[in-house]
Length: 295
Length: 117
Image (tube, rainbow over all chains, first blue to last red; front, side, top):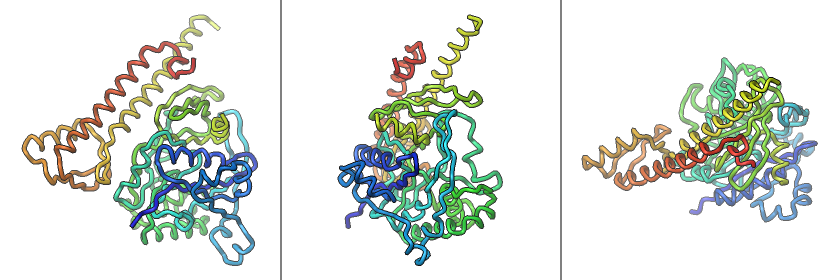
């Protein structure tokens, strides 16, 4: 039996950030470095097709997800969680904007994915090597990064150790690999339950943040799947997850190289340059990423 | 600004950038030393190379179980072949690390360090 493999990205634009652009660039890189197709889940299908005329060739499938009145009647996860929070997005240390953050659909990945083996990626992951391809060779059915590497080398060791000081281990929902198995179906159903009852889980797991965050709900679900203890339901993704926060700036993006300006902690507005070669990086500064994609 | 302080700050910026580049190189070396075999992930360390070398030397080179980075037991059918692969992985990474490191040492300005001249 032939197993279908591919990347799934979620792109839901807000007033200033074109996530479709990032997804479009990511799909091309996924084809080049990972040799797999990419499907996009978006609520901006018309915009995507107008803005990128070859989108239907670049993407394997374009999956429209639009909040409709019927969702309310049918009581779908989407209808219960469609509550876009305003979040602060930085473009370096000196510019900040409050914009809508539409991150609620990630938990639908299992249902929406057209693939037997899916690699879910954030649109702001810039693929520069083939390491992520190794996911598809791994025997384990659910992979996620537990740790990450801050290119700025700022002391964030405690930020991403646990979801809060008194809670469970942190996991990065940025890159997730899963196979369609009954156990993973159970996991994604649980994720939807957590998302729909976020105030409760936010309270129980002592997160105390007003925002819904996928990293947190994935961490909670993994903890529950492990029997409320540490376990091996989730194993590590291959390689290293490099990241830069949105207070750093992506300055130049070539085929496999990036030039980044890293924020100097404690010196607002000052940066240190760094060049990466052949490293896949999660670039959280979406404004600078879009500027670099534009060239 | 006092010229002495200005020069020191200039040098300080250079050192910060140099250290950043060294850090990234080191991390890349670490990533390049990952070897994937039969769905398992092995970080090729001196310890792994020595252990595998010792087993091969003793003639134990078929159907050997090794525990990978994720604590998953992986059956290695042909350990001699595995040894060759991990040595290749390690030295390809080490040679690249060495070459890039030597390049870094030649660069005497922030711009040159990050290839933005």
